[in-house]
Length: 301
Image (cartoon, rainbow, N blue to C red):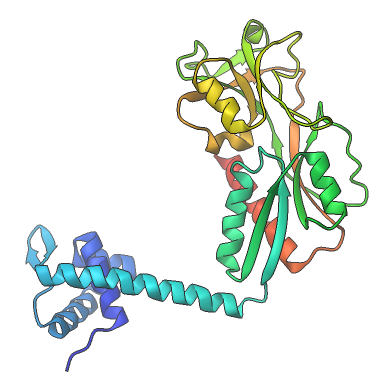
C-alpha cells in the first residue's frame, strides 16, 4: 500500500505554502515532474486528492488541509529531533556565563547568544547584566568567562593589561526624543540646539558610569534620573525629556521615540569591547566569534 514519506510531506507542505508546483520545485531544488510524482504518491497514500488544480494555481482540498496541518507538526518534530541530536554530537556543551553592560545587553549580546545556541545546542548560556567595573571584577574572579564592556571618552581608564581584548564596535551616541518632539523630523542637531532641553539621565550605584546628558553640553538641565533603560525610554516616550543612547542599542528602541545624530567635533566616541582571560575555552571562543559577527551586522545596518 502507498505510504506517507518525509520527502512527500515536505513537498506537499511547500506546494501549499507557495500555491504552485513550479514555485515549490524552485524552492526545493526539484524538477516539476518530481514534485508532481511525489504529490501523486501522497494523494495515493491519503486516498483522496490533496490539491484542486486550476490555471491560477492550486488550492487545498479538505483532505489536503488535514494532511498539511499534520505535515507541519511532523516536520517541526523532525527539526526538533535533529536539533537535539546535533547537541549530543556537539563537543561544545556545558555552561557559559557572559556579562554585559546594560546597553550591550539590549541587542548585541542577545543576538550573539542566539547564534551560539543555534550552532551549539548543547551549550547553555547565562547572561549577567552589570556595570563595566562590576563585570571586570567578576571576570577576574572567574564568575564570568566573557565580558562585554564600554571604554573611551568620559569613562574610567580601566586596567585591562592582564586581559585579552577585542574591539567589537567603535560606537557613537545619538539623542533619543519623543516622536512628537521638534527634533523628530531632523537627521542631525548641533550641541547648541540641545542647550535648553530637559534630560533623562541614568542613575546607579556609586562608581558605576552612567549616561547623562550629551557629554560635551555645559550645565545641562537634568529633569529625571532612572536606573533602567526601559524607564528612561518610557519617560522620553511620554514627553518628559530626552536622553542619549549608544547606536548599538538602536534595534531595541521602543515605539514612540526617534533618534537624532549630533554634530559634535569635540566628542571622540566610545568603543564596545569584549574581554576575556588570556586563555579562552572553546565555549568562550565561540561566544567571542558570535559577538564579532553580530557587531559587524549592526555596523552594516
